[in-house]
Length: 92
Image (cartoon, rainbow, N blue to C red; front, side, top):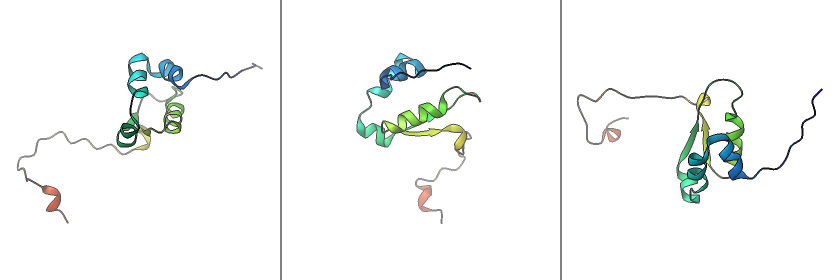
Protein backbone atom coordinates (compact mmCIF):
# COMPACT_ATOMS: atom_id res chain seq x y z
CA UNK A 1 0.00 0.00 0.00
CA UNK A 2 1.40 3.40 -1.02
CA UNK A 3 2.19 6.14 1.46
CA UNK A 4 1.06 9.62 0.53
CA UNK A 5 2.08 12.85 2.18
CA UNK A 6 0.46 16.20 1.74
CA UNK A 7 2.29 19.48 1.83
CA UNK A 8 0.87 22.97 1.93
CA UNK A 9 0.99 24.81 -1.35
CA UNK A 10 0.27 28.49 -1.87
CA UNK A 11 -2.89 29.45 -3.71
CA UNK A 12 -0.88 31.04 -6.54
CA UNK A 13 1.39 28.00 -6.94
CA UNK A 14 -1.66 25.74 -7.03
CA UNK A 15 -3.20 27.89 -9.77
CA UNK A 16 0.09 27.83 -11.69
CA UNK A 17 0.20 24.04 -11.56
CA UNK A 18 -3.42 23.61 -12.69
CA UNK A 19 -4.14 26.40 -15.20
CA UNK A 20 -0.68 27.69 -16.16
CA UNK A 21 0.99 31.06 -15.57
CA UNK A 22 -1.20 33.28 -17.77
CA UNK A 23 -4.56 32.18 -16.37
CA UNK A 24 -3.13 31.97 -12.83
CA UNK A 25 -1.96 35.59 -13.02
CA UNK A 26 -5.29 36.71 -14.47
CA UNK A 27 -7.25 34.97 -11.70
CA UNK A 28 -4.88 36.02 -8.94
CA UNK A 29 -5.02 39.68 -9.96
CA UNK A 30 -8.84 39.93 -10.05
CA UNK A 31 -10.23 42.57 -7.71
CA UNK A 32 -12.79 41.61 -5.08
CA UNK A 33 -15.44 43.38 -7.18
CA UNK A 34 -14.50 41.27 -10.21
CA UNK A 35 -14.65 38.11 -8.09
CA UNK A 36 -18.21 38.98 -7.07
CA UNK A 37 -19.47 40.01 -10.51
CA UNK A 38 -17.76 37.56 -12.90
CA UNK A 39 -18.43 33.85 -13.04
CA UNK A 40 -15.65 31.41 -13.80
CA UNK A 41 -16.85 28.35 -15.69
CA UNK A 42 -14.73 25.23 -15.40
CA UNK A 43 -15.01 22.61 -18.11
CA UNK A 44 -12.89 19.77 -19.40
CA UNK A 45 -12.92 16.13 -20.34
CA UNK A 46 -14.59 13.57 -18.11
CA UNK A 47 -12.47 11.96 -15.48
CA UNK A 48 -10.16 13.07 -12.71
CA UNK A 49 -8.61 16.21 -14.19
CA UNK A 50 -8.95 18.42 -11.11
CA UNK A 51 -12.09 20.34 -12.12
CA UNK A 52 -13.99 19.84 -8.84
CA UNK A 53 -10.95 20.59 -6.70
CA UNK A 54 -10.21 23.76 -8.66
CA UNK A 55 -13.83 24.80 -8.24
CA UNK A 56 -13.71 24.30 -4.47
CA UNK A 57 -10.36 26.08 -4.08
CA UNK A 58 -11.52 29.09 -6.11
CA UNK A 59 -14.80 29.28 -4.16
CA UNK A 60 -12.82 29.17 -0.91
CA UNK A 61 -10.91 32.22 -2.15
CA UNK A 62 -14.07 34.20 -2.97
CA UNK A 63 -14.54 33.48 -6.67
CA UNK A 64 -17.93 32.75 -8.26
CA UNK A 65 -17.37 29.37 -9.92
CA UNK A 66 -19.54 26.95 -11.87
CA UNK A 67 -18.68 23.52 -13.19
CA UNK A 68 -20.00 23.22 -16.72
CA UNK A 69 -21.37 19.68 -16.28
CA UNK A 70 -23.63 20.91 -13.46
CA UNK A 71 -25.21 23.67 -15.57
CA UNK A 72 -27.73 23.93 -18.39
CA UNK A 73 -26.06 25.56 -21.37
CA UNK A 74 -28.11 27.40 -23.99
CA UNK A 75 -26.45 28.69 -27.14
CA UNK A 76 -28.31 31.12 -29.40
CA UNK A 77 -26.47 31.38 -32.68
CA UNK A 78 -29.19 32.24 -35.22
CA UNK A 79 -29.53 35.96 -35.90
CA UNK A 80 -32.98 37.38 -35.16
CA UNK A 81 -35.01 38.16 -38.29
CA UNK A 82 -37.25 40.71 -36.57
CA UNK A 83 -35.47 42.68 -33.88
CA UNK A 84 -37.44 44.29 -31.03
CA UNK A 85 -35.80 47.19 -29.17
CA UNK A 86 -36.54 45.90 -25.65
CA UNK A 87 -38.01 42.44 -26.03
CA UNK A 88 -37.92 41.68 -22.30
CA UNK A 89 -40.67 44.30 -21.71
CA UNK A 90 -42.97 42.55 -24.21
CA UNK A 91 -42.80 39.08 -22.68
CA UNK A 92 -45.24 38.14 -19.90
